[in-house]
Image 1 (cartoon, rainbow, N blue to C red):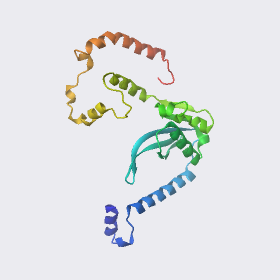
Image 2 (cartoon, one colour; image 1 turned 180 degrees about the vertical axis):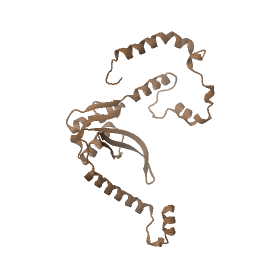
Image 3 (cartoon, one colour; image 1 turned 135 degrees about the vertical axis):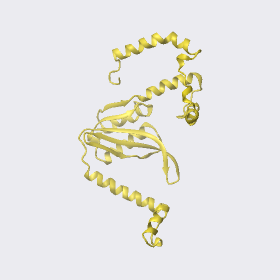
Image 4 (cartoon, rainbow, N blue to C red; image 1 turned 60 degrees about the horizontal axis):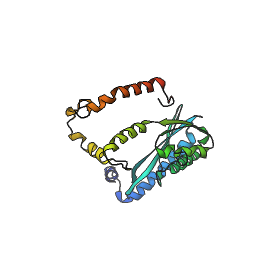
Length: 228
């Protein structure tokens, strides 16, 4: 607002002739964005085979509203790479996500182009009855799954932590949050690995050979070839 006022004054224009209310500017931006999107829809040439990607995140809703669940919906393919929409959802359930993705693909007339889905392996995505992957049912055919397994590592760390700390359904574990908030105050040069700790080393040494043998077998046998 202040920048716009300064620009108008610097150009020698009469500022009283311009409506500088926040709502007017916001509505003008929304209108222009719709024009841009319609132009892109008319001119963009998408590849016949596309992958639809999505991921949800709680973000500020804007316009002095509280935070909201947003879903980024993206498609990629040969010579195609486009973020289609980032709608606000009523909740973060898989069903809400699947509906938003399908509506967006229909709006862009891309349902027939989608051949694969890329998503992380949270329950809201992979649930067989109400996960976002029920998008297949809405599109009406099987799609290739390109699942990102990075959340598996998070579960392993969480299971270790919950041995010592209470189980929580919150996305923010308090002790990890305190650790992050105080990261800059920590002297990293004093870091010590567990195998050098007098209490931890004996426990690890008992399991060391078993763990190394297990990891070696996993790498050789590749039980889950589609993930490893």
